[in-house]
Image (cartoon, rainbow, N blue to C red; front, side, top):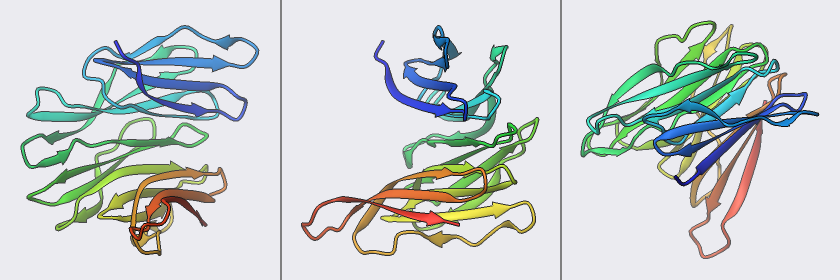
Length: 238
């Protein structure tokens, strides 16, 4: 089978995990300093799509992906890698309907802090209805999905998440040629949605990273739509 859509995450000591799609499976392989690359492992053998991966400082990891199921109903799934034990059993954290009005199935983003807390975000978008961004957070167990944003007129997609080690986090996503974000912390909860790109043209393909002390960097692709070159833009979010 073709090996597609690689994703990688790394701990501060250089231990890394890479995941990829090998339809219908999702596989993973870990790199340990001094030891080198370890054997390939299965994250899931069925229903695999594009998987995102994140890791904590101890080497535990989460992979998140969309299982389109029977083509009528799909699920957002996660699997946890426990350091010293390996990959567990895939777990469903949300379900969604698939029908002719769906723009595309959810493409989840995942992030972990140093202690192992995690967040998964995804967008369910429809041409004829609205699109909604959801979030589920992990602190020993996965919480119920929370509504992070809703658009009655526009399609959202490409949701990504990042967290620090002090219960703060950021979401970033695409909406109709613009890049939006929303941050949260343990004291204030969710803050107002902000537009990150300030220029003209069309912005897409957001990316996001966050340091352990809360400074985040967002990047995206901008097409000025005026015949000039397409370029990469970025912004520091503090």
